[in-house]
Length: 377
Image (cartoon, rainbow, N blue to C red; front, side, top):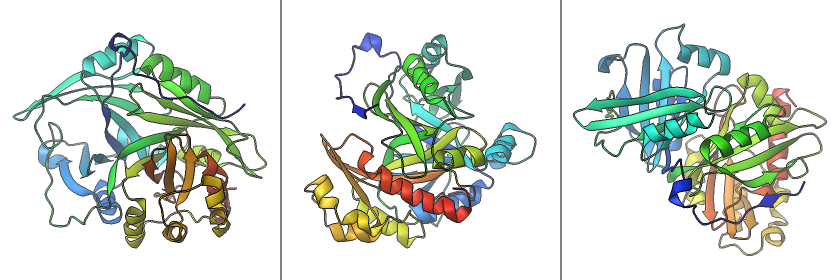
C-alpha cells in the first residue's frame, strides 16, 4: 500500500454536512490530582487559570480546573471519592484524555444525527443554565473509553459553562505561544483501525485524507499503520494508529499495555513560532525526544529551501517535513505521565497539510531509545 494524500475538496453542500463542526472546544483529562496537574500545565506549558468547579460550587463528587492559552482549553478533573466512574477510569488507565469536546452550532442535532447513524450515546442532549445564559451539550462514545462531547455555546456569555466559577490566581506565568489543537491522535488495538475509520466516516461524516502503512512508519524493530480522519472543513482531524508486526514491541503496543486499552496517544498543539515556543517550554522543564544529530546533515537535500535558521532547529531537536502545499516543523515531548502513554506534539505549519511522513523513521528511533530505557522494547 502506498501513502496517499487526498487534495482538499470543496466543502460539501450544506444538506450533506449533517455534523458541522466549529473546532475543538476543549480537551478534558481525568487525573489523580487536578490541582497539581493544573499547576504543572500552567508552569511548564504556559496556561492561565480560567474556571473551577468543585465542592465550593456545589459539586460533591469531583473537582475540575479549567485552564486556557489563546484558543486552547484544557479541563483537568479529579474524583473526590473512590468507587465512581472517574476514579475507575484513572485506576484503569492512569492520567489521560477522557473527553474530546467539539464545538457545534446545534448539540441536539449533532446527537440525533450521530446516534441515528450508529453512534453509541454517552450523553443525551442536556441544557445547563445560569445567569450568563445556557449551554447545550450531548455526547457519543468513540474508541476505548474516550468520548466526544458536542458543545453548543452560542447563547452563553459566562467564563466557561454553568456550574463553574471564575478561577482567579496571582500565579499566572506568561504563555508559551501555544494557539489551538491541530489534531489528536488515537491508538487502537490490533485490526481496529479500519473499524474506527468506518465509525468516523459513517457516524460523523469524516473523510480519510491520509493513509500510512507499515512500510511508511517502521524501523528495524517496530511498525504501525495510521489513517487520518478529517471533518469537512478540516477544523477537526483525528489520526488513528494501529500496531503492525515488527521484531519488537512498538510504541503503540507499549501504550496499549500501559493504558490498558485504546485511547488518546497525543495532542498536537499549533504555534506560530515553534523556536520561541520550544525554547520557552524547555526552559520550564518540558522534556522532548532526542533526535540523532545525523538527521540534520541531509535536511536541506530532503526538504529543500525553508525560511528557517537550521542552527536553532538542530539545537532544539525540531523536525522538518514537506508536502505539496509547503512544509511543517514539529517536535514531540516525552510522556508527561509516569506511565509511557500521553505526550504532546508542538507543530508549526508553513502551508503543509500533512503530518510529517519524512520524520517517522527519526521519530520512531527516538521513541525506541526511550522504550529501551524503560525495558519495554
